[in-house]
Length: 276
Ligand SMILES: NC(=O)c1ccc[n+]([C@@H]2O[C@H](COP(=O)([O-])OP(=O)(O)OC[C@H]3O[C@@H](n4cnc5c(N)ncnc54)[C@H](O)[C@@H]3O)[C@@H](O)[C@H]2O)c1
Image (tube, rainbow, N blue to C red):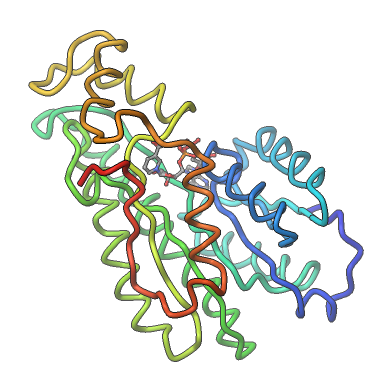
């Protein structure tokens, strides 16, 4: 972990600190930059394998006015690593009171009959157990200190409506929505709000490119067999006739973390251009 800020622990406990997982990715980076731009200290987390892209997020956040940024790497499914990282962050930087629980894995695209079960298990592990593991470690720290906070879990419209060729991903994101509602009830007494966002198609970026290419490769009643056709068919599902931007997702997450959402908990906001 390399902190840019020399703020003391006492100063740190008084300021807002946001832990953002999946911060090397497109949405995580946009959220981190949005929060940093608001003057919130950000702790940027991702898998060790994404360390280079994580450093790039850190550079961009540190360049924002009034921001400080630090990085930490862990696999969200490794509870010991998650706890160790959060303990190190708390002692060196301050205990985060905001969590963007955003790391996610789309998995292999295949019809439900063909889906590789080991890959489906990994999707569920990262997207459900990973979200639960980070949420638990984060909330335990705040409860220990008797402080409130706010959490936003990144779900998906796939979890609301079910996406073709994405059975494990869809199931995992439905679980994130249910997990959010349940955790909101468990943590309301601690002053910790828990909400979710469900983006539809977000682009441009790695996930958009990947899902357009992968859907084109899989025989399906829903999509054609070339990426340009799939892209058009996806956009045609959206009443606003465009994909959303990462900044539009970041705006909603920043709102849910802010005091402007102080009476919202257990809510899932669909960021979907009118799709449902
Ligand atoms: N982009 C979209 O169209 C879209 C739509 C709906 C929901 N989402 C969700 O938004 C979130 C962010 O997506 P994105 O578009 O930025 O994707 P992305 O692939 O750019 O970013 C995901 C990040 O999660 C990290 N990650 C994956 N597995 C991890 C693990 N086990 N431990 C730690 N980090 C891990 C990756 O390294 C990556 O940096 C995901 O949860 C995704 O499911 C994305």
